[in-house]
Image 1 (spheres, rainbow, N blue to C red):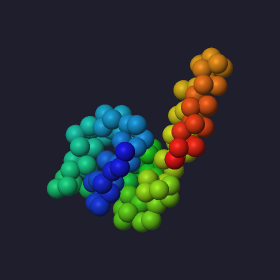
Image 2: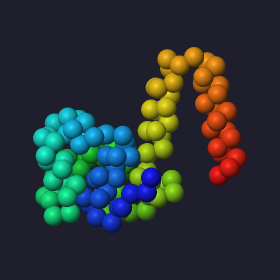
Image 3: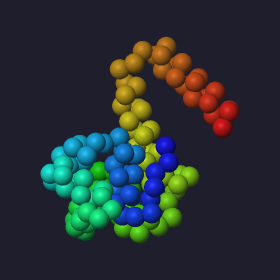
Image 4: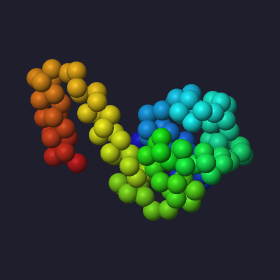
Length: 116
């Protein structure tokens, strides 16, 4: 999924969604009200403090520099770190799956790789 990243509010939203978090999840992780996250994600809303930007960076695995200015990012236009976070989520989710299912998933991924 492609996200707009031309403003701070759009980058905050892209980082949150890319991390698989709802506004409520992010608010809990940052110890702020859900409405606060909503304001940060609105074009004319208020901006987070530098402390909140650092916390956002840690929680969503993107750099503060990217959040603030949209500096060049890695991985085909996605916020840096998102791929590592997704791989970690896949690993965690796979721990309780039977080996036969994991084998099928790996084969599906290899097949998809050949078509990219």
